[in-house]
Amino acid sequence: MKYAGKFAKSLCLAAALTLGLTGCGEKSPLDPGNPVSLTVWHYYNGSQQAAFDALVEEFNDTAGKEKGIYVQSYSQGSVSDLETAVRESIEGKVGADAMPDIFSSYADTAYEVEQAGALANLSDYLDKEELEKYVDSYMEEGRIAADGSLRIFPTAKSTEIMMINKTDWEPFAAATGASLEDLKTMEGVTATAQAYYAWTDGLTPDISGDGKAFYGRDAVANYFIIGMQQLGVEIFHVENGQLTLNLPKEELHRLWENYYVPMVKGYFGAYGSFRSDDVKTGDLLAYTGSTSSAMYFPNQVELEDESYAIEYIVMPAPVFENGKHYGVQQGAGMVVSKSDKPHEYAAVEFLKWFTEAENNLQFGSVSGYLPVLKEANSVEKLDQVIAEKQLEVAPKTYDCLTTIFQEMDDTILYTNKSFENGSAARKVLEYHLADQAAADRAEITASLSQGMSLEEASAPYITEEAFEGWYNSFCNALQQAVGR
Image (cartoon, rainbow, N blue to C red; front, side):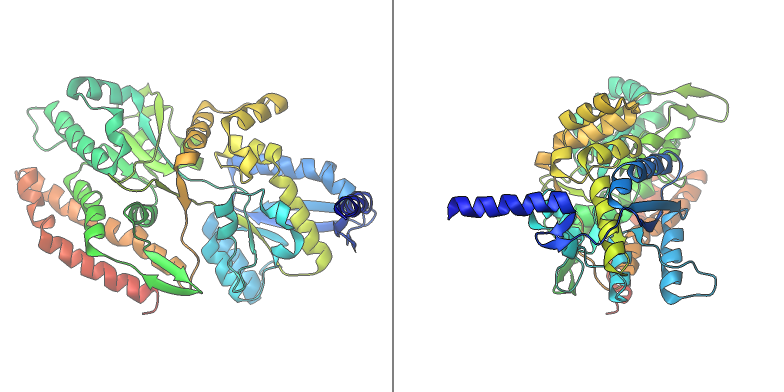
């Protein structure tokens, strides 16, 4: 019986390969002589769009032609532009384009579309062996349906890294004894930023209070979500679709101390649209941002009266002292619009091809995104694909990817589960504290210009009473955002 079972399985596999079956005994709905046409909407631009379009063309010329699938891709501009286009299509607004067969989507947006009943069940087109090839947490993120079935296909992910202006770091480190080792924790980053402010202030002894900010970060919401995870608290706990807000005062105080306090004192900063912009203008020395932002780290600092070339350092994103080694899991996946079996099946076939190790790493080596198959997340596999496909990979992107690959075994990637009003709740995390810090920093800067010392000017803003006021306001804002 054992050998008979193996023989039957072999016959089934042979039949599937020969007839193009979706599963044993089920014929493929595709006809190479009458190809299914698919539209894909995404938010890639520049080199990322070029890389994606090149892979789409390759698919159409190879696997797509063999299977009977033709894919057309369209950039919708920004993430928000794409989300707007999708919502208008679902609502049937006048002038809106028809829903695409596939579109890029973050979990919160996909959750909204799923609630409208507009997403295909991808679990119908993937067997257990195929599902197990993907990074487990990526697949778990996509199980947003009420029954736990898959709705978001992971295609390219990212996490966060720290990037540093090495050229300007070195004289500071030489003068003060600052160490890169200190930057492994958030508390170490805060202390280093204070030392940098004092050191730069001392460079102009005739002008007091003109120290410079050392550090900034993109995506303050990630700081809250991952920072709290590192401290043992899941700020958005979702079970059976129900949200529990966890807002313990002690842990939030640590986040406040290591973001708001250094922001209002000028040790941290946020000036341009992204922190890489602030490195370019010389306003920051280091930042935490997405792996996909590595390509935007500047090659030079551009001041009003001069510019100079800089080198860089890539490090893992800092973790709270004694905290668990959590890192953010982010990056949109692809969802498939509910339609008919041939289109849904064809869409999944394209996504499976796109996420094959060689194709996914080719895209990632240009975009800075992480591949989604378990086998693809290694330096060795990346080097193999670069060599075989003779890819030209920017050193910053390569160093960013390899830094993350080397840390993967020690890092727990995390993203919260989707819930109703999740986008509104994330906006509170993103802006509530950051906006207050910016406004209060402006007040402190005005006091400094009138001759106050930094200690005097900042004192009223960093008391326990000030924290209590922010904490209560923050909790109220989150509760309102989630409809409590």
